[in-house]
Length: 194
Image 1: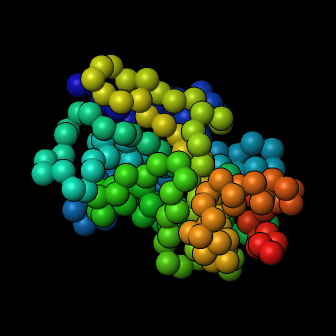
Image 2: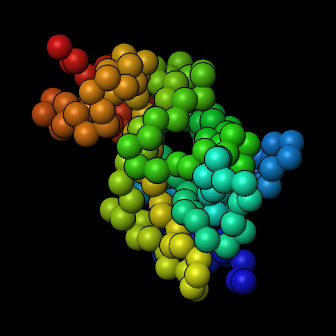
């Protein structure tokens, strides 16, 4: 089997350009997760590298399949210079390690919560996992491996996260769209939920 991570990094570079910074985090009992930072105009993007090294497996399965299963990396896009968003690196690494640590499958529509602000002073403690394929195209791998999806993360305020639990991801995304919410604003207020 080919090592997936060099292919993933090459896909990120072809889609987002050269990273201007990278940081690595290792949690006890997990593989190393890197977070790469890319600048494009007034947008800064953070992409994980390491989550896709192994397929995510169903936590109820007796044995994890070492080859087949969904693979993903996470991408967060925010406006540069408005907050200390570089401190989000650790939160992103925590989220990227969650399939190994907690045995969860990260998929579009899921909520991921880090239990603290994503960066200092951030009004967000969680993210909504959005559909892949827009910013970074899926990376096809040799059979029988599943492709790597690059999942955008949309920061949610606690009120939005609670509302999403009741009404669903689609309803929250429609609310954001209807209200013209700038999801890249690192200090935005919660969308109107009434």
